Image (cartoon, rainbow, N blue to C red; front, side, top):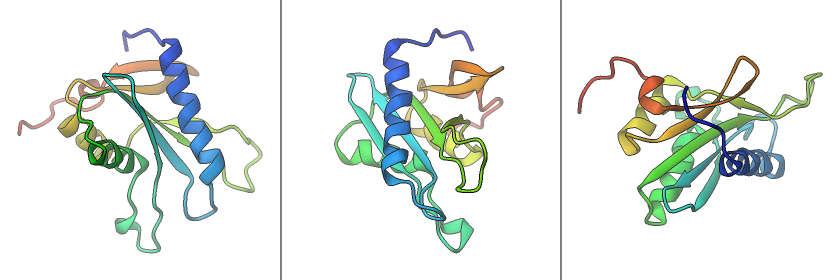
Length: 138
């Protein structure tokens, strides 16, 4: 976790928060992700909740697919955020760490991609491979 959080990183977090504010729907979309390419384009997406949990598609997968579909494949930084449930007392949209499957997917498509996470109640940025120690080789 040795990368400084830049204004561009804060803008990326804000983009993820903005899209989930706009697209939040109880039991449908409560996580979003924002991805910045190495040339500065920002993509956002929400996750797709399904009644059969294994069919659910994470926001990180959605945003990677969106960027690739638009012709971008050189990824710089990604972040995911979660909207609170309607009955939650804490109404803050918080950064969440990618799940194991998303860590694998990010590493597959952006081997040197950085990930913004929370560490000790503050923003931190790390290499995806730091979040995926002893990863198998492709």
